[in-house]
Amino acid sequence: MLIAEAVLADGRTIRVRTADAADAAEIVRLVRSAFGHRPPVDPPAAGLSDTVASVRDRLIDGFGLIAEVAGAPVASMLVEVREGAARLTRVSVDPTAQRLGIATLLVNAVLDLLALRGATTVDVEARVEFGYIAAWWGRHGFVPVGGGAHTLLLRRALPVVAEAATADEMQALGRRLAGLLVAGDVIIASGDLGAGKTTLTQGIGAGLNVGGPVISPTFVLSRVHPPLAEGPALVHVDAYRLGSFGELEDLDLEASLAESVTLVEWGAGIAEGLGPERLEIDIRRGLDPEDETRLVFLTALGPRWAGIDLNEVTR
Ligand SMILES: Nc1ncnc2c1ncn2[C@@H]1O[C@H](COP(=O)(O)OP(=O)(O)O)[C@@H](O)[C@H]1O
Ligand SMILES: [Mg+2]
Image (cartoon, rainbow, N blue to C red; front, top):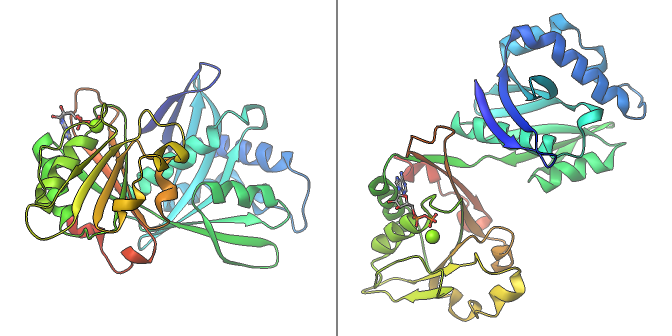
C-alpha cells in the first residue's frame, strides 16, 4: 500500500509503501548497511543479528515501511503496535541515501499511518552513544521517558485524526471544536492552500458565536471577531506573508490573547512563540486528487489540554 510520495531535493521521486513478507531480505540488507555504517558499539546493535526469517516474522506480527527511489529500496523500518502503543525499530536509511530528508519522510509517514489507525503513542529507542540520533528524534517531537544502560527510550503522542468529506463537514468539525475552546487558547492551523483552514475557522467562529464573516485574512493579516453573546472573541490571523515570530509579534496579538481564541493560519514554525500550550491542526488531502476528503490531524500540547479527549470532536 502506498503511504506517501514526495520529490527529493535532487528531483527524484520517493515513495513510501508498507512492506510485506517478501521484502524481508531487502530490509535485512538495509538494516545491515545503515547500522553497519555507524561506529561499532558494545553490545552491538540488535539489528545486526537480524535474519530474513526473524524480519519476516516481525513483518507478519506487526508491519514495516519501505521507501523506494526509482523502485530501489533506500530506507525501511519495522513497527509493532500493542493496544494503541506503537514502537518503531530498525529505522534504517542506506548510507548512500542519507541527508536527503528520507528519514524524516519515513517517520512522518509512519506517524500519519499510526494516527489513522488509532494508535495514541509511539516509542523508539536510541543508543546513548549516538547523542545526535536522540537529538534527531527530539526534533520530531520525541521526548525521553526512560531507558537503560545503553539506550534512551523516547516517546511522542500521536495526533487524533478527524475526517471531513465536504466543506460542510469541515465546518461542523469546527463547531464541535469550538465547544472545547476557552479564552486564551491558541490554535495553529497548517495545510496547503485550499486545504480548508479558513473553512474550519468558519465553523469555529459559528460555534463560538462571534461576529462574522470569517474570511481568508490574507490581505488583512489579522481580524478580530467579537463575541455576539458570552464567550471569547476569535482573533483570526494569516501568517502566510510573515517570515518570523518577530513579525507576528508586531501584530500585537499578545494584547488580545487572554480574552480571545487566537487562530493562526500558516502559523507552523512562526506562531509557536505565542505559547507552549496550543492546539495544532494540520489539514491534508489524500493521495487521490479526485477525492475532496480532508484528514484533520489534531495535536493538543500542554497541561491546558490534559484530560481533554479530542476524539470527542472527531465524530
Ligand atoms: N472536505 C473539505 N473540507 C474543506 N474544504 C473543502 C472540502 N471539500 C472542498 N472544499 C473546498 O476547498 C476550499 C478550502 O478553502 P479554504 O478553507 O480557504 O482553504 P485554506 O484556508 O486552507 O487555504 C473551499 O473552497 C471549500 O469549499
Ligand atoms: Mg485560508
